[in-house]
Length: 277
Image (spheres, rainbow, N blue to C red):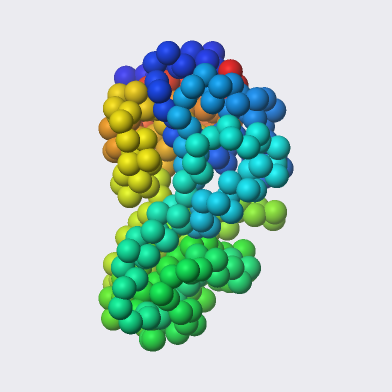
């Protein structure tokens, strides 16, 4: 099978009632919004569609939503900015009754917002941790051995671990570095158990579907730039998908994309060059 090539997002308006849209690589890159993306998102909302922005960010929803507005996207042009960090926070909150637990938090730049409002106290000791939360990576600062030493005592005790950013590679101002997903793989290699939260894993799609209650799956379309995360995630959730060829696949050939379709067992329903109407 090959995806149907379309001219733009407007071609899908009559087919779907709701859209789950990736942020980075679809709406924007590291420098800001893609040309025309804010206007296209606004037109889609004005067409009466439900819109959830779906992101593998370890930070919570509200923080990401505010940042998107500061980048120039129109407030109200999406219904919810749902992050993997938000999903994890809700899971941990539901488990929060009882005695306070010690959490070994792996984040970036000292950010502890992932624990705000939870019955968790931060610890720097894997030997003391009751739960491990992998929210981000400082792979551009530390060698992977730093995290091995930090996490090994927790993995040996099979302390439960949540990874809220499954991306194995991250972009930095100096190039690429290993992401939180690579640290989660290390935790598994050390013998620990990881609950992966974010695309392409089920929890984030279940949360989005609950928010879109009443809209049948055949009327929901996922839009993304990653076959591994966005397209495979949509397929696993039983939803249609559109691949845009900006972002990580901007320079990929048709043949290279087809190889990735086979590798991840998922082919997008539609293909378009950019997130434009």
